[in-house]
Image (tube, rainbow, N blue to C red):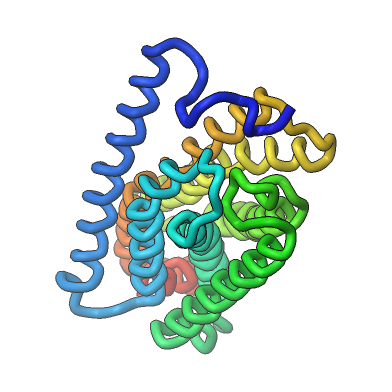
Length: 305
């Protein structure tokens, strides 16, 4: 049984579930556009100095906004039987910005890791100009992989999800590589940062509490990433490994994919609070302390430059 036999564009189930789905998507669009638009305005218009983190966050907000703008069209064409240019465009924008968002979250984690674990190297590796270069490379890689994916899928029958290409190996392989590799990097960097923060000498109770909050926010960002993206890619992995194209798998993909869309809202919330907690920790670690403690605090301060 394939996706075409699984019914109409609407999710199967009671009418209440369909209303819940529409309410969820409507709230997601409104909240996501509002939060990311506000974040982009603050980052670009209200802050006087660009830092590495702000460069990444501005690109993340742009990526999430593009995904949200493409989402209604993407959902409209989700079960379309024709591979029209508008269908290809909406799906292309959606997919490019989903995996660009994943890449940027990973880049932020690597940036934090370098700053905390390798503070001496960070002085030469981290700068707003280099962050711009990293973002440019990521955009080129993501868009380039999408163009390659489009070319391969068109050779195999079509690009949109409901065409035959929606079930071929190219689509699945690109999706899995675009998630599992960043996931491994993100987990490693996040755990390294948390470990480094836990090992730092503390001068007083205020500094200890600020560092603890910063660690919690790093773990919270990791948890949001895993909760939003892992279920969808696990279902995708199961479908590829077992060759399943049943209605149950189709429904699971729709539900977990919509869950991953929530990351657009959570990105803006989580990274705002993460920056706030790191700023608090940085301000406290800047207070006079023992020479040894002061040396160990430098790498935490540099994460907020």
